[in-house]
Length: 479
Image 1 (cartoon, helix red, strand yellow):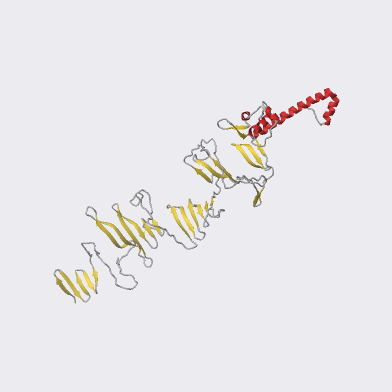
Image 2 (cartoon, helix red, strand yellow):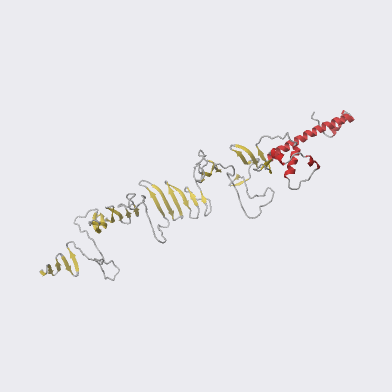
């Protein structure tokens, strides 16, 4: 039995099941409405509060949006929360919404998607979707745990025309990527068809690899080394660098400067001023090259500094502050080179000019210089007199030496300063040639003196006796 109670224009239908007030049923303290309802307040107080006073650890309060459809279908919207407001023309506008889509309504294999939407430039767009274990930002089909997609460059999401992903904090910020102890964690950079690059960390090795073009570019080894091109066993200590270039033959290391423009582009780029490279494409060795622009001197400088006095030992085991050494392979180690081997050569372009060999001898490829216009012995003595600083024993014949330091410089036996003043920089090749000339001049004088003495002997004791004297003294006349 139902009774109706009218209060002004509001009718109340009462029954044993509850009280109905114009479509609103009050039952056991609850409300069930069969029509759309609006709650309006004139201030900023809470328009609707859902309160649970239950003291247990279960969920409460609960707001349930139930799409009670008699014919549910895939991609139905199960419910939506809409945030709207007026625009400056007084139009009610939906600025954002949160809704749930029934991706798959098949019994026991149901899939759902939580969609976040905003209005941008007057158009509604989905900015983030959450699937089972997948989150998509800017895409409704995330392919990984987190899939961020900017629909078009130059949108309000990337004002400078570049898609970007920003993490910002006023204090410390950390991204923590966690995987099992025997797995690999990584960041991948790809297009729609390929893996263009990635950064990977292997927990089992503690190695971090940087990969581009489908291959490893360089690796940070867990022990502290850095290697390139996938070298997993760099033969350097912690903090060391191992450069691996595979079978490539171009420079493995180059040095550049925007201030340099040497112009030798047929060899290397014009701003490259130094390179390290294999000497032989298949046999190894090292080639160091320096490139300079308009530099008359000091194109390659090797210098070393140290504290304390340098050793003065002069022996086969003596060492200098700078050492150039050459070894030959000896089993798995090394040893001395073969006899008469060329240890060091100095060349003018492709023409070798100086050779130092394994026996300690020195060879030079120079034209023969002659000093026929000089008295070579006097020129040699002039060298001693003008450059000696101590230990020179004077001779009574020194007064007859007709040459001086200027003559030595004119003969290019000593050098000159930039202002033309002769110095004590000795041309030892010229000195060697001068000594040869002096020896020959003295030989000629000795022969002339011998002939003169022979003629005197013939005149004094006769030719037979003179020949006997030559034979006794083992002297042979050239004529």
